[in-house]
Amino acid sequence: MNSCPVSNCSCVKVQRVPSWPADSLPQTSACSVVVLPREDPNSNLLPILKPHEYKIWITKKSSGPGGQCVNAAHQAVRIRHIESGIEGFADCYRALKSNKALALQQVSRKIMEEKGKKIARERGILRKQYMGTGDRSEKIRSYNFLNGTVVDHRLPKPDDGLSALEDIMNGEGLLQDMIEPLRLQEYRQRVKDYVVFEL
Image (cartoon, rainbow, N blue to C red; front, side):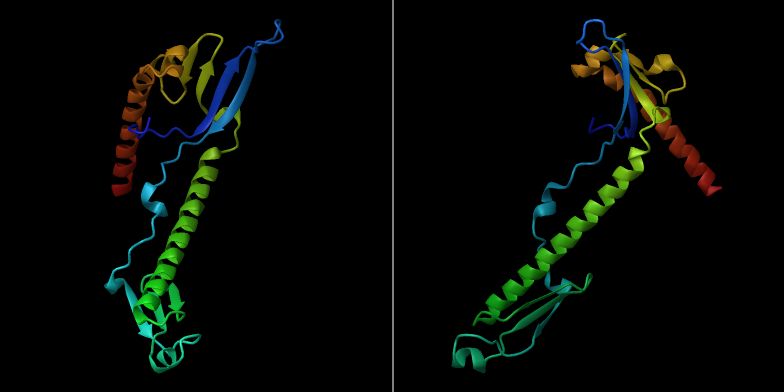
């Protein structure tokens, strides 16, 4: 499914007969399905900042333990990421190099946190947008366990979207037969939208 660019976010109808009690009537349910892109596996790694991406100030003498060495040298470091304005500050070490490394780490961590919040917001907006109301009128596909069929309602001819339920549930590739016409339909719609936009 990951290789297929067809949108698969909407309401799905499921028709089934419960196994208990024996005289159960067919039941119909609807549920919303949202398929979102996978998160980047590298999104949890701290970004490595290049020197041209930040400004650095050696601002004041460090404070804390260390005696004359600390009081005599300018070792406190403030770093600002140019693009985002995020800052980091360190003055707890004797060595300027150590304070710089700590300040850079602070900035990188804050950038990563902001990026994570932004991704979470965007995913939340997408999820909310695709969920809809969950009403059956929004359904795109019906899984009929009684007849053993799957019908995709986005296709103009119902027979084009008809496929064997058991084969699809077992992942035997018949879903691809249903997806190809959808992919073609989506491509045509994009071309149509583009032509209308350009005119």
